[in-house]
Figure 1 (cartoon, one colour):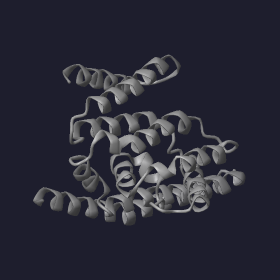
Figure 2 (figure 1 turned 90 degrees about the horizontal axis):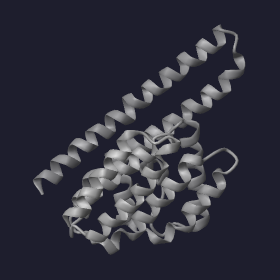
Figure 3 (figure 1 turned 180 degrees about the vertical axis):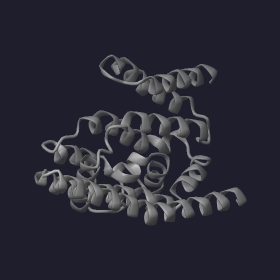
Figure 4 (figure 1 turned 30 degrees about the horizontal axis):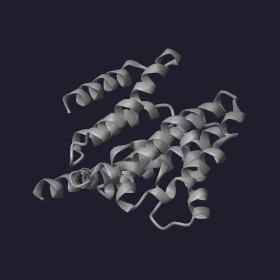
Length: 233
């Protein structure tokens, strides 16, 4: 209990700092880029710079709010009491993220948002906390999403969050982020479930196969670690 309290307090302080100074730095960086574009005569870039800056403010705010809510601390606490059955919706959300997010464009963004909306009913409040608390990607994607939300409202929010993430360039490290999240879940899930480990291993084995088209070594290493975990169970 003491550890959870200390962890939550540290996470809150981190989130507060991230929300204030983090957003200030993002805004100052945007202003500097805008001034640079104007002085170089590249006026057409200003609108894109403004759009990207506000998108990054939104993305940073989502992660900061997740920290202020102590999502990571609460997620780890929940995992200690969570069984493999409870993680079905979480795994499905990560599967969808791995499959869809790296390929998001302005043209297909709405379709991708709809896929998350369609799977939204599989997630309760605890699952949402675990997603946001173990993954920065999910903290941004599921910002403002809550249990019992109507599908129309969820669809609009997923669209807005994906648009912000896409403009801010936050979809490039999805595979690595999800790999770390699944590894964290495997190391902390309460029943040490073989099935959960097998699911994670299968998922990352498929990622390993795609390394031929650009996956870096970090994710491949996680695949190996999860493979070892499977053999040990």
